[in-house]
Image (tube, rainbow, N blue to C red; front, side, top):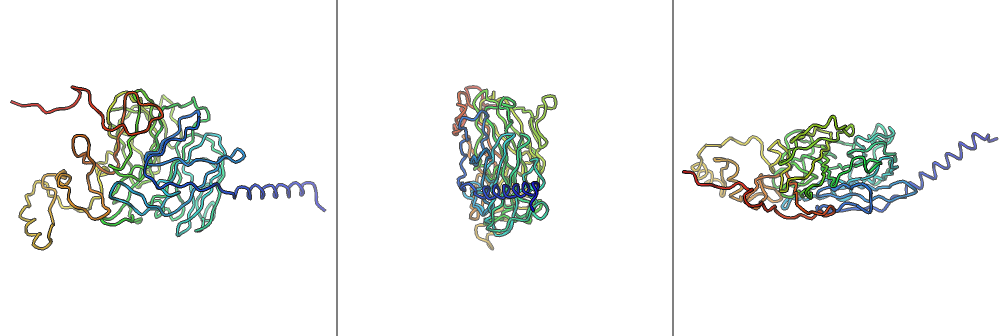
Length: 423
């Protein structure tokens, strides 16, 4: 005989199976291989959507009140900057993967298809969720085998800036670029309003000169440093109209801490991994250290027009591929050494007698697919930067929905440093 309790329990199992079956109908895969900055997904939203410089936001599918997303873990090629395309791993054709954007209180369902040559999983870094959805392969779930699709489902309990990345073969998969941002907006759009909202992921790579595949076993000695897997001069600028309130969210999944410095402004840190900071805890800063595995959100009022650099203040992180154990040749005359070396190796040159700027001026030939240590030209000559470097471009009269690069800033007369004659 079947009791009422057994009947209801059986019905619940059948209902659960039906829901699980329905959940397996994953949304169409949306992919992107461009390094251009995608326009924000406005669509009449009450909040200001985020913009991922050199990246994009994954549009959801609404299914009976649940926001559904589809991530595909796969090999990708990423142009770090013109002249350098790197073999990476990522999601939906890009590294970092597409930004996921939702609202506090949303129920989300995220399908993950594995097209890698090994198993994987996805950990939702900083998000409060059931233990079985935490994405640690071998502990909270089986690893996702190649060719298989798993589904994660949970309710977003708090707003903030979060990340996603594998917890399977972590060192290899994260080192190869598997990561993304997960932005959760407050349920009340009037709670933390801004006019422009940017998000950036920091990462490091070790790519030997003339090659295209990162060394995933490197622990500390990296030679490429990126904002959203782009190195200057390939990084897109952040734009703001004069008077805009701007939020910049920065997550760090590299192996180093990064003191991010913004010229021209003092900012207030408004958010950390643990949540939003009350005004009483917000102190003015010009350099914000972003620890490994952490995030920081900071805000400013864009009241000073200009092209303002934003970069890591570990200055070797604002350079391109560098060799280690380079001899110190500063102040050492070595013209005679060059002539002797050229007898053995035609075209060899010694560098560093007067500083590294001479390398930028010489425009020396490099191995194929290798960025120079310093690169990028500004309106007044070489910028001599690379890696973790970009610009905040503040302009008068820039429309709130305009994210086109306005070009170089034109300084008002009398507002620029200039040469003078000394007696």
